Length: 217
Image (tube, rainbow, N blue to C red; front, top):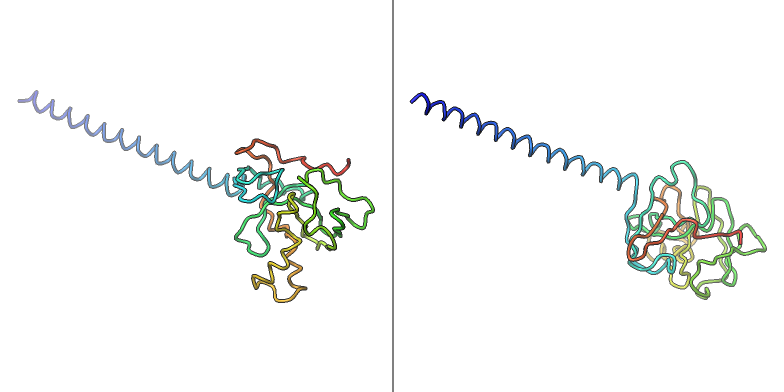
């Protein structure tokens, strides 16, 4: 009888130990899951941008449906440079994220004449060897005066890119601007609206997106 009670006691103790071990295992997995969620949140919220490009406005640099990684911290300690490819909140509808190339810097004037870009009345146009074809759509008669704290951005695929050239009209059509003067402010991307710098595509094409513009040649 005594042996039976001792056996029952041992069984009960083992069940308690097993239950305690199971609880510890479950809690360890819960903690691990929480840590992973927090890390993913921090990384995607403050460190990187993982985006899919839905249109061909940046072809052939970035192709339609390409997936890319951008760094949110790229401009924590320095300003965007001409030629950088940036992700930003679309001025007309900030809920949308766009990707374009920086062309005009704060305080600069930018003129588009006959498919060429001239900065600050330079007689020499930018060397834009990243354009996929001859630029013929909306390629003449534009004059931009980039406000301080803002940037002028354009798509590489100029014949198929809704960018600074048309955002004023889009602002009027959307009703966010009521006058042409007000609409012109929507042609520029404010520094605060820039989410990060595109670094590389990893699907469907693996391609670096830094140093894709060389204006010295």
